[in-house]
Length: 508
DNA sequence: GAGCTACCTCTTGT
DNA sequence: AACAAGAGGTAGC
Image 1 (cartoon, protein in one colour):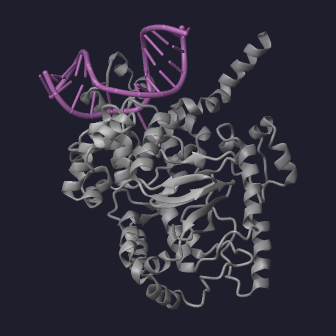
Image 2 (cartoon, helix red, strand yellow):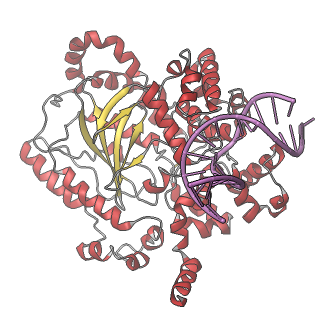
């Protein structure tokens, strides 16, 4: 394995805009693992990250950064990033990206890894060029102190920002000062030490009152273990002063920052959308405060296709196990983090090998084994990821129809893929949960239906699309998260259910 | 075309 | 302990 380095990117992003704890375990993505310290480790395309957050920022540590990537990233993204930002400007209204905008996916830019293998032989020559491109930044020197780059590229529209961007330090002394300054800045400014200690008791979660009365209290109430959040933040402050991180050139930071922003779709202002949906739907308004920052990820389509083929008749835990098996047995080794080896999600060609169906059956995929092997062959014949990406340009209905050609992909899975990796943000995947929610809270006439037939499916998805508009799929995921069993403790602690619990306890 | 059922395996509930 | 039901469905009849 090439020598790999780590660095950290701090993304200014309110927990109201992105809540990792909900977003990463509400069944969109199956590869994020929560560490004992409450952080999240997982992969974004071929990069391995550990993420944590406090109320105002997301801290992202990249584990498998290789300086060998520099040259290609700098050269290949120079144009695409520019064209992307231009497209973003063109397609942005009041901090929101227009749904179905024909934006070039970040995934398309990430083919550099494969190309990288081809030019590895010429690496030395390339690296020399790289230094010229990168300018005066000493990419090969591991700095004594790390500077958390809070560059302008981090500026997300519609997101709250604590600190303004700072000038990059020129000398070691400057760097140290800036680091100190940054650490000071990075602390929970609204929450003093007394708050940090008091916040650990559960009661104070309800009255999380700070100088910022911008309803932080109502947001973070029950669903998050706030003490965990604060603990993890404290730990990150320690991490920032660590010398284990390298100091990559600004272009590289820009590239990876863009990768993160793209993955989390941070160009969309969630708070605006929540307000809009709450106005349209009292039920949403009731549920939303306990489930802030539930955001649709922009995931690699190939990974999504096979992950959701595994999802049929399975719960999230088991889907995660199956996806993990796919990666371990057919993907490439990327790096090791805290003793765990991370594998990339297999490419289509890796899922086309002979005898794969039998192997998958042995691994416990059951009847999904043949779906996976057939779909892999189909994708291989029609252009793999490029074909999937081309579906972004089609109207939603056509995209949906095309996806149904894949064996093992029915209406629900097709909608998951459309919504989570093909930019069709109005797609509503109707599963048993959504069916139950719809019958219970929106369409009582469905209560007599035993199963989700095509007719019922269409009725439910159209209802939600009409109710919520172009980002209906995002709103649906909030309702879906609120209904998930794993978050039921959050619901229990809210409102009347909490009172009922107390009553019952006092009776005993 | 609408509706029913088998399908793999694992977890959860009784 | 043993068994049934259900799990973010789909294909085939």
